[in-house]
Image (cartoon, rainbow over all chains, first blue to last red; front, top):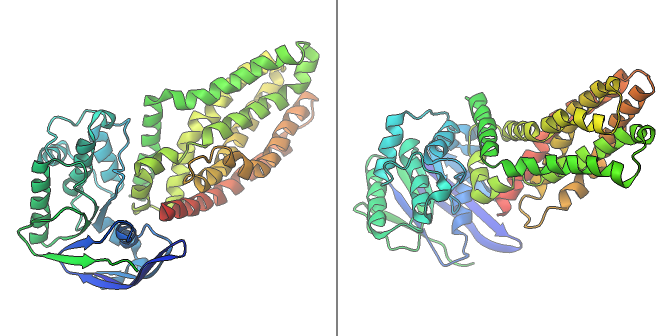
Length: 205
Length: 225
């Protein structure tokens, strides 16, 4: 489904990775590993299509992504270091606004169900500015359920999440994979999923 | 769907502005302060004030717009909203345009509403006020669009504040010249349609080109971060 061919990324004149090729099939969880500064975030951004300084090809559903980027972007969700939430808006307003950007409108029930899954029931009218770092991360993760994308690109999703939350998130990753979804994530946390994990090791050039 | 996304970006910015009133009030207060200080510092003589009023109001408006534009994309860049906007199916130039329009309502249109008051303060005859308002409506949107390019280019820099005016000032100067020219012409009873038509032409040019330039700069900024 997702195929990467000969990806290459440079930061200034330092090569991060070269000739990187891999493919990801429905039901696979790819775990990108490697020491700090090796280019894990850059790789995820490149796959999401956020990096203009790139060479190599990304293919999705047997077609070049650059031919129809809209379709590809509708099926992926990229959660980076930055949550993408506006602190002066409430949780519900943020999730609604982000869903509209994907061409969806959330019903009150969908919103409530998603917030319940991430453990933030009753927080829909709270300003994001008043949430803790972990709660903000959970609001961002609620988008996995409100927008139900097929390909999850998660950059350090476990940051600031409590221990119970880590186990929950691992459960969601496995659920998603079992339903035919795809996940690519970076984390330094040792994953224990009930489904197989595809390790992707980046080594310093 | 593309329009819905643009409309929602527009509405979100207006809603944010309504909750953080300090950000858009500052340039307006700056504008009014300059206008009230001029008679004190230069001369309270009505005939001299009327002569300079157009220029003073326009310089104050230009600086107020430049002051406000620096933050256009910065908060979106810092909280990750910009990354998410790049991943929407809507074309980025359209979203840039939606953001600039929402921002213009808070700066340009608000300045235009204050301008008749400033004109009266500086002893402009009421027959000139219409020209003043029209020149500001056409001109401030052009200024906002041009400054958006500068704001997008400097969004990734920690201290880009002074760079935006520096980069975009040469492109603001024609707007300033023809806008103040229209007010001088109105003061001497000459026709102003030609000046306003030129301002309109600048606006059309900026509407066609600036969103694309700003969008390209934003893509670069996100790639580099």
